[in-house]
Amino acid sequence: MSFAGKVWRLLVGIKDGLVLLFMLLFFAMLFAILSARPSPGMVHDGALLLELDGYVVEERAVIDPIQAFINQQAPVTEFEVNELVRAIDAAAGDDRIKAVALDLSRFLGGGQVHMQEIGDALARVRAAEKPVVAYALAYSDDALHLAANASEVWVDPLGGAIAAGPGGSFLMFGDLLEEYGVNARIYRVGTFKAATEPYSRNTLSPEARENIGGLLASLWEEWQANVKKARPAADLERVTSDPVEWIQSANGDLATAALNAGLVDKIGSRVEWGDRVAELAGKDSWNDMPGAFASTGLRPYLADVGEDRSGRAIGIVTIAGNVVDGEAGPGTAGGDRIAELLDNALNDDLAALVVRIDTPGGTMTGSEQIRRAILRHKDKDIPIAVSMANIAASAGYAIASTGDRIFAQPETVTGSIGVFSVIPTFEGTAERFGINADGIRTTPLSGQPDIFDGFTPEVDAILQASVEDSYRDFLNQVAEGRGMDAARVDEIGQGRVWDGGTARQLGLVDQFGGLQEALEWAAKEAGLEDNGWHAKRLGSAETSYDSLIRQILTNNSEARAPAGDMFAVFARQQTGQVSRALGDLERLTMVQGVQAYCLECPREVRGTDGAAIKGWLARLRAILAN
Image 1: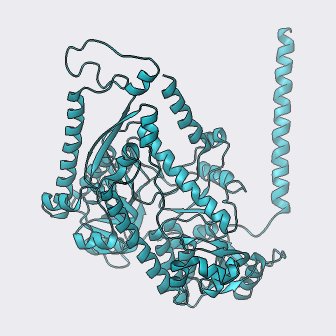
Image 2: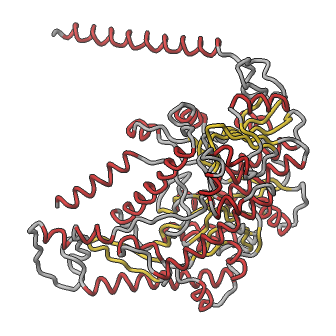
Image 3: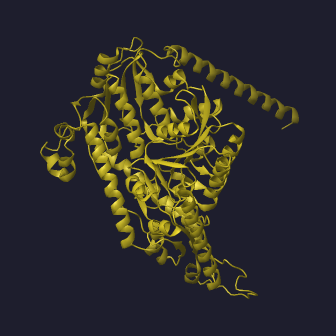
């Protein structure tokens, strides 16, 4: 083809592309016009509608549109707990809001502390004599926890409610690794540090079983106490002690069983629930569909109420997700990123700093970067408060120990003062395939570490000594921060995890309370009046581009968690096991140095990544092929 012909075809292609683009824009505008409603930024007299179609988290994870495209999987919607609490509290005193409508049809949970914080906010709405009306097709533990704080709880006739309680299985890979000749070299300190057990055992050790059992019993006791306090009519004893008899007494009808046990008030469809909300908050003049009611969603309501910016600023830095090295996050606690946020705030004239923690731990190097950055603020003689959310364990507690005062809830999981490192070697695997290694060393460290010929005794000794040194540093940091003797810290450490109530008795926590209590304490310590300060979150606000990407990827049917009956709820919960197994395998195949991580801690599940499953399977195949 001639050069002119190629140019002509290029121009025609550009023309066709532009025509297609303009057509898409035209139809998008036409759709917007035809589906016009009052401005989404307006707050209408009616209900505050909270459709929790996903997870409640401490910090939303950053969305990578390219990765989402490659995975062919839309990210599940996430709701930050502080935004929900802020919106609910604003609704309590807003004359435009007549009720709070809580739709939990696609709710995936968020942890006991988050549920209690949101529940307390809902209780404040009820104290303002405004109804809170909840609906779901099926209620699991976290949904029941939230709904208990509603004035009316509805369940679909096809649905039900189950209180399963915390606990479950850990996948143990000891036999699998032995079968393929993989040697998981474990270096650890802490009798109760169970994070390495999946790689070396087939069952939990007696120490781990004792520690985990005590923790889960405490969490379950707190859950029952909180639900019973919010909903005295609930017959939790019957529901939890003999669930088979309870359900069979209703002839297997889970919705009726929930009603008989006082877990719900009404059995009805989503439309009937909507009609009830319309009675309380008003009908929707723009929508005549069955079950429609006047409402304002979370996003437009938050945009309308704004945030107070008067007075001195008290900084809030969030440490959420696994602690890692580098710039990862939000949603993952990248040590470099968070340290940079803290250092950038050194010149912001903060009156105080509150460190909000929700992490099971991670790398010691990442946590140390964050810890040192907090200490640089402490050197400026400003109060440092720590607010623990669901989890502040291992490396998370190392960070928390820098605070002048530590706040936690009884349901918080903390402690796990212990360190470890796991490095896989494949000398057994290589031998099975007829591969042998031989060579010459000038020193015991020559060619080490060697994953195909194994480690020399000297390397093993050096790595264990390094882990023990990290543990001593950990003990000394906690001892200095908490004003305790290092021997005492070691006694309550050794990898043990504690619930918030026990941690307070042991001196690892100062007082019960959430983020608001930590802010109020910091303001008082800084000498500020009640109206003389405001909270300032450290970190860049979400850009318009990021917000657009999030809306595009999460405001669709794939991103919304599927509604389903109790069987569907049970099936969704299995994604937690898949996620846990993937995380354990990831930690084995990606050596991250010395870690302080909590195996026993409840883990935030953000959906199952199909690409990740394929990735670690491919990695395992590659290992075996070598």
